Amino acid sequence: MMGEQTTTCCQICENWKGNGFYLLDAFICKDCEHLMVNTSPDQEIYSYFIERLKERRMHSYLM
Image (cartoon, rainbow, N blue to C red; front, side, top):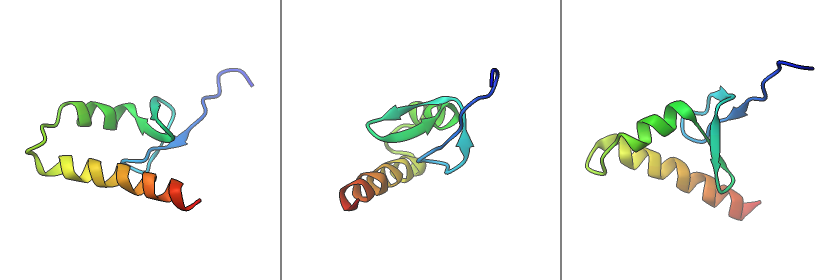
């Protein structure tokens, strides 16, 4: 099936995307990666990113 792109659920936005990377076992889409690298720690959304990644880590421990 040439031309098909696999999609994976992004740990941050929870949307199914085809472009991104894995940080340990958490998939992060390119859109969220862009937001994350352009966010400073003093911005409110920064803590949201951290919480979303922590949720994944805790979920992995429970499995």
